[in-house]
Structure formats: C-alpha cells, structure tokens
Length: 384
Picture 1 (cartoon, rainbow, N blue to C red):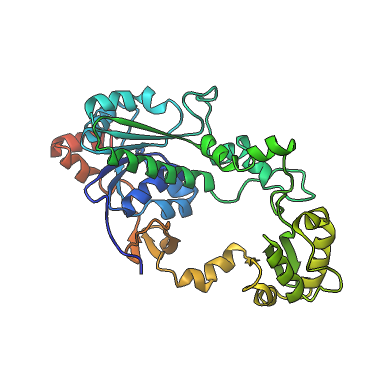
Picture 2: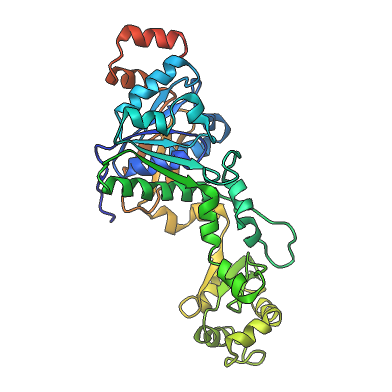
C-alpha cells in the first residue's frame, strides 16, 4: 500500500493552460496536497468539449475559476489572485501572459516570493522562442519522431500519447519543488521548454553519432548494441524480445529449441552482424505460437513482453488491481477510470472534476470582492 501523505498541503497554485502539459502539472501538485485553482476562459476550457477524456484525466481535485483575461477587470482579478498564491503555472502560448499583463515580471513585483513555472515549446533564449509549439512539434524537431521508425518504414511517426506534455509536467514539478526547497527567498522563474527535454531524451544517441560517425536507424524496434532485439509476430499478435547479453542468448536458443539453427555460443557482435537472419529464424519459431506461450517459455530467463493494445491494457489484471487505478466523476461523462502518476502518493478511489466555473464566486469572495462586485462581473461576463 502506498503511504498516503500531502507534503504540499497549504501550497496555493494557480494554473493557466489547456490540453495536457499545464493541467497535468497542476494535477500532480494537487495529488501532493496543493490547493490548485484552474483558471479557465469564460465559457470553459476547450478540452471539456474537444477532448473530454483529457479533461477527465488531468483536472480532478481542482477548483475552477472562469475569468476573461482579455478584459481589464479580469486582469485585475488575476493579479489579486496571484498575490495570494505561491505558484503560477503558465501553459499559454509564447508571450501571451506578457501581452495580457500577467507575465512573470509583472506578477513578481506584486508577489516577491512567487514561483512562476512556464511551459513553452522552445527556450525563451533561443531562436525559436516565438514559435507556437506543442507535444508533436517537439517530437518532430528534437528527433523523437525519427527514433520511432522501424525497419522498412520511410515516414517518421509520433509517439501516440502526450508523452512530451506529461514529461514537461514532471520536469515542472521538479523545478517547483527545487524552488520550494530554496526557501522562496525571491521570486523564481522556472522554464520548461518541450524541445529541450526531448533533446535530453535523445542525448542518449548523440555521443553514439559522434563516436561511430553515423546515426542509428530502425530504432522503433531495433537497437544497434543488441541482437536479437525487437518485435516478433506470434499466432495472435506480437511479442517483444530483448537479448541484452550472452546469457540471455543461450537461454533463448535453448528455450525456443533452436540449437540446430543457431549456436548458443554466438557472441554479441556476431549476432548484430547476423541480425536479419536471426530475426527471421526467431519469427518462424514463434509465428504459430500464442503470445502467452512465448512469454511462459521465456519469461523467467529472457527479457520479453506481450505487445498489448490499449483495450487489453484497460482489461488487464495488473491495471485493475492497482491502487492507482481510480474513479473520476464528472457531470457530463459520469464515472470513468484514470491511472494516477507513480509519484509516491495515492488518492481517494473516487475523485471528481469541477464543473465549469464551479468555484468562481467562492474564490472571488476569498479575494475580498463583495457580492455586488461579483454580481456585476458575472453580468459583464468578466467571470462565469
């Protein structure tokens, strides 16, 4: 059982942003105990309608304030809010908060201990600072789409989940926690460029290119340092097999009964040179066998895995029995299951996403606005 604790209890956070990066950062902070106010535009966050699964996944355990930041009074409300919190998460486009008058420079004068975390596509100090970008743009520009290509493919392919946005959120949490450990002696600006950490991921390969004089290919399934290493077709789908050393190789040859075709004494460099031949022999050996039978034969001796689709993942006992697999309620979609990030905390089995603007009046009252002020702002659509 994961120990339930709230190390960020009492921390107040304002989250600006939509889609995945900023919302998932705010969600992780809320799981750690922070009070998170999600600022939505009047009319609500676009993901409520466009990608409701994303909305459900990353926005529970927050308060919702709908605010028109294009109005002078809306900006005044946000500034008053920023003075009362510890952290602002900015996931809007490059330069947007500055143009609205709620960027770091303005807010840090109002709140000298503010931690301001900005998630952008490219570094503000680089030549592409003004370019609009999101998850797939960073995947393309920083080489991730290239490394997903497998043998025989000529078109780069994106990773089919928002891995870059989610990693941006995790890096943002690290930056915010670091600033908190520093004691909030001054206002802190934390920048998380999507391009930079995808480049960090691919820094695994940059020395390889410099040492070998060539770039690796077919990285979607292969690895230039190991063989056999890839995906093989079985009678009912695919398995991944990854032989990392000579011992694994000996066991593979023995467990699949391939002693007549392959020598268990073949060394790594020899296996790499004979990769295509070895791959063909292994695929012939498993193509009439169900995946689970291959896993059963190799599982305790050779690294291997069943290649699952997402529906089978959803139905798997490993997922269903996990305490991080929790219920989230919404007024529109009812009850769905989400999987919480493994950050050392757990939450109630029943969570809920806020209704659009559910906490607007409550938050404005906390900020000192009178009932008359709130009524006028509601009438004028400054808030909703």
